[in-house]
Image (cartoon, rainbow, N blue to C red; front, side):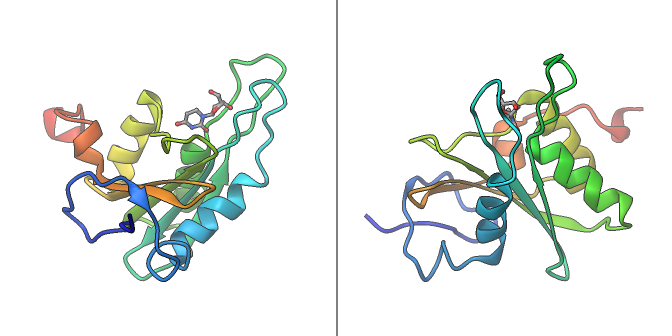
Length: 150
Ligand code: THU
């Protein structure tokens, strides 16, 4: 099977990437590369995230754990906070890389933060084998709480 990164508004897809479509996507490459920097000595669960702006600028993050556990921060939030702190606001695409057989989605806290800054972005979940799933944030974060409710 050879399906991978699909355009925005694609329904959920899971399948093997074709090199030309998936592993060559700079955003996916960036998420996989960022995962290599993960500091995850406690869980052993390494995560990489990458965000792309409208103009194609890419920001990355990895999870950074702490011996107190609770101070751990997820890869997605590291990437968002890096982007925001550097003045980026037009975040449009998100990729998350793990080594799970079924590519792993962002946790609940990260979904909220991603919604705040990326809106209903394209979300690509990928693993080391190149299996990927392409969806929208709203697919996994329906009826969000956001500024429109305040
Ligand atoms: N983790 C992330 O980096 N992103 C998520 O969305 C889920 C969880 C990290 C946090 C912790 O370092 C490890 O994965 C296990 O929970």
